Amino acid sequence: MAIRWVFPKQPGWTQYELLAENTNIRPAGDPFLQASFLPGYTTSHEGRYTRLPFHEVKSDTLMDMPVFLEFAGNRMSSNPAAAAVQPLYMAVTEAQLTDYAGMYLVSHHNMLKSDLSPLPGGHGIRVKATLPHRTPWRVLFIGPRPGAFLESNLLTDLNDSCAIKDLSWLKPGKTDFHWWNGDIVPDTSFPPGINFETNQYYIDFCAHHGIAYHTVIGYGGTAWYQNDGVSYAPGPHSDPSQSVPGLDMKQVCDYAATKGVGVRVWVHWQPLMKHLDKTFTQFEKWGIKGMMVDFMDRDDQQMVNIQTEILRKAAAHHLHIQFHGAYKPTGLIRTWPNELTREGTLNYENDKWDNPITPEDDLNLVFTRLVAGATDYHLGGFRAVPRSEYHAQFTRPLVLGTRCHMLAMYVVLESYLPMVCDYPAAYEGQPGFDFIKAVPSTWDETKVPTALPGGWATIARRKGNDWFIGTINGPGARTLTIPLSFLQPGRYEATIYSDAPDVSSQPNHLARTIRIVQPADSIEAVMTGGGGQAIRLHRLFN
Image (cartoon, rainbow, N blue to C red; front, top):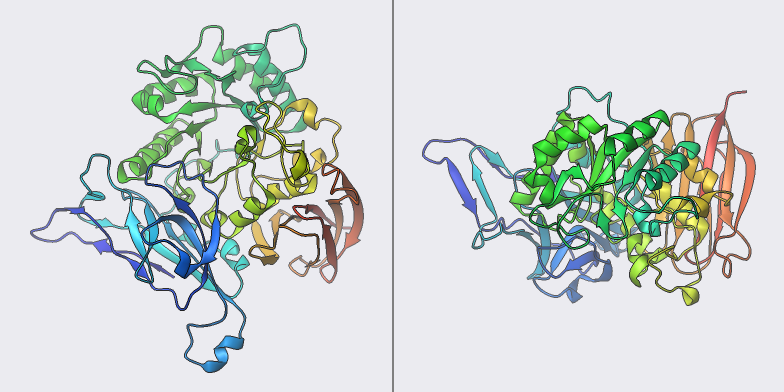
């Protein structure tokens, strides 16, 4: 279900200032609620999810959307027999957030009440608009099978059609991101840093393994562009249209092009907006294909309009966008498909500074943040350790969960720019890297064969005639039976990556098996706590 408020053009009323919207939802009974609770409106939207009964939610505490609710039975019915039916689920979010303030939910008098992000310095004003005007869609997914929320195209369908006439230049694909691994390079004759040789090393890695993009970030906490701020924070004269001395960005882009690799860059949003037109013109001249825009940390009407302007002008210069430190997606990729992904969630970058992401955190994303759309993670950490052995490492970070759990995340998460974040030597010759190289970044169809909030999630995605299946497990060892009834008739070669027998102590170990399957078959996933399974199904035509 989706509703919106529309303010038509009318005599005697040309504009309005909005203090509150007061769109409320009254959940039946006392459902379990899962949400990310936020301390305020200025936030990176990178919080953990909490699951608790609705009556225990503190009044007027901001909840980031999507919010997920689980009802013990169909308590919305007056039929006494309703208590015997299966649980009912609901997810609440918004679609088509344009020229409006981002919406949160708060618990207020047994209701979920809307709360809008205020304009900076606006004295409580949330929205300023000229008529005609409209709010975003307020969207409720309701049903007995929460996997259907992920299969739905409702959020994108509620947005306007594509605003970009020619999409031939837009190429989704995987990208490296050496900041996560600590800017690792091998022992070589060149000094590592913000120079051609360091970027060449990663470009060659991408070219050799079919990774579409190399990201130019900087080195050792210093941005690649001229910046008089501290570390990556901008100063008053920061200018992303000019690279630092010693880095010829045209040389980097030209070399990458000879290898079939695109170059993208990291930028802080503030200096980008200060020099937006000049920077995008320069990027196009250099041959840059896109960028990560970072540290946005707001979703008031002004920031919402800033993001829309970035997307619109980037499209005119054939540039894709990846938003970080940003609010949830709202299906706007239908209108501006050059937004390949966005963050808006706690992710594996936190493993670098003693706040590790757990397999339970990954599972909690599935029916909350992932319902909203493409979800960017620093994926691909290949140094899994048991929880007792984890410690923070800014360089060569450690990760929790098994190797197969990490592989499955490439299927579980929807993202059109999946990261391959570890350094080249961490991957080459390692079991499972072949799956990362093979997994697509865009999909033609999504199915959720089996999932239970708080327990496990199995997501299957099709690209052409092939399917990829990712299963991630929560706490406790588990054996799942995954039905293949969603397949088209025919025979498929299934390459299965499963947790190895000794995975509890050696979480990077996996077992790779191959078998022939048909739609009437099923595949067992035998997983340790925090484990996973990844499958590639290649359709056979002989």
